[in-house]
Amino acid sequence: MIRNVSLNRWNYRFWRRFSLTSCLAASLLGCGGSGDSLPSTAEPSAAPAPTSADPVSSAVSDSPASEPTPAKDAAMPTIATQSFGQTPDGAEITHYELTNANGLKVGLINFGAAVTKVETPDRDGRLANINLGWPDLAGYLENKPYFGGICGRYANRIALGKFTLDGEEYTLAANNPPGHLHGGKVGFNKKVWAAEPLADQNAVRFTYTSPDGEEGYPGALTVVVTYSLNDQNELKIDYSATTDKATVLNVTNHCYWNLAGAGVGTILDHNLTLFCSRYIPVDENAIPTGELATVEDTPMDFLKPEKIGTRIEQTVNGAGGYDHCYVVDGTYGELRPAAKVVDSASGRVMEVLTTEPGIQLYTGNFLNGTPDTNGFIKQSAFCLEAQHFPDSPNHPDFPTTELKPGETYRQTTVHKFSVAK
Ligand code: GLA
View 1 (cartoon, rainbow, N blue to C red):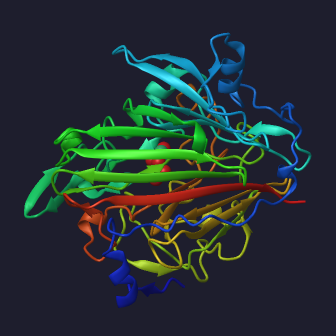
View 2 (cartoon, protein in one colour):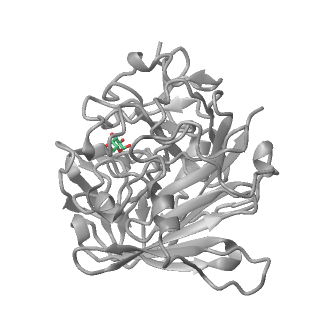
């Protein structure tokens, strides 16, 4: 039975502190598993995807133009850069490749500040790309599933594309009828971002300024997203944002993961733990009903490790699977565990920690094996999108997503990769 619970006052106090909290991006546990002792050269994946298991890395290694950014000293990691083409408007898009001491690789582009690939080892040390993407810029220009991109200004849904802020009603595109999804017709995932490689941090910093009125949102908003890869096999995403007028925002990264390798079967056998005692029930349009319900005795319960596929058919209003936001246990604003996923077949493990109050579990229910989804089939990947709750501007009881001039929005989300024996 689903029991509804409301926010207690203690939590509420923390939640109202959205955007004012300095996030504790504390450094995490030490590195574990055989991922620490990788072979120096990448071996092929055990079962590469036919069309797109690793489209980008081959594009990078095939190009004679690929050149590392000059490092200040020998110990500093190098960030390989390569042209990724031009947008129809003539903007130059660059591909950046981060590599850590263990051989993990992360690909990034300044179109959508998107992650193009993440290569991690299986229990035998074989690298595979575990992040769904496109082989070229043309794919990202369309990118109906939002592979790898930063979603905003408001990720997830706003009911009927309407909200009121400081007494004024704003109308946004109903691009996911009847609601608004992932920032509208041209969200942050379709924007050209300024990029700055930070070799001393093995990081790339992306900046985008969304003009006042863009997609109907008030205020010129400057968003900074920094991806960094450390030698503890952690991919960290730091976000910050400031505005010149009161606005709303909810930013997230929309990576699709398959720990067996992109294009290798479905994720229904992956074991998932969500450190989330509550979730947000939604109506048939995927809009929150306003309740925060306990997961107890429901198919939403992943407090203990469970295969994603075990109860997926019993989910409600998730388009044939999970497409729901969970309330992450613990204190919003502090970096804390949100999810852990284990693929027993390959041994790959991914943990997600975040400062955000929520995390959207989406099991790729709209992937359909067509060119629109780069051939990836239904439920061949999962997303864990750290974020605020959907439709928060219309739910005063939810943690606020308002940002005012003088305030700084901050988020830190960490993906930690390891291997189970
Ligand atoms: C999010 C949504 C899903 C779907 C995907 C993109 O995760 O919650 O319903 O729209 O993005 O396909």
